Amino acid sequence: MKQVAAIIGISSSALSQKCAGRINFKSEEIANLAEHFGVPSDVLLGREPLEVK
Image 1 (cartoon, rainbow, N blue to C red):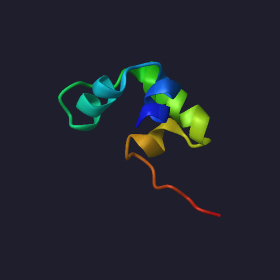
Image 2: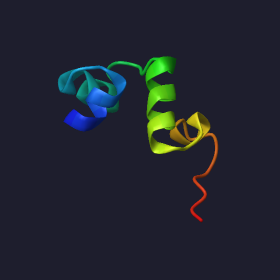
Image 3: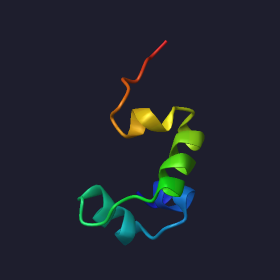
Image 4: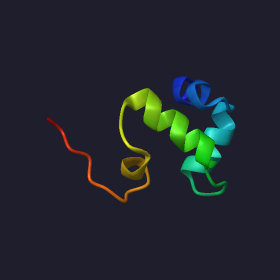
């Protein structure tokens, strides 16, 4: 959790609240995660399936 929080520039406790649905992710945070993991943001949002090759 600490590493993911660092990737998007928030605290671990804020990430925990976002993952629990208490706080919404900002579009910039989603974009940073998508870029870091090399997947489209729509995959993280559940709009597209993750294709594993």
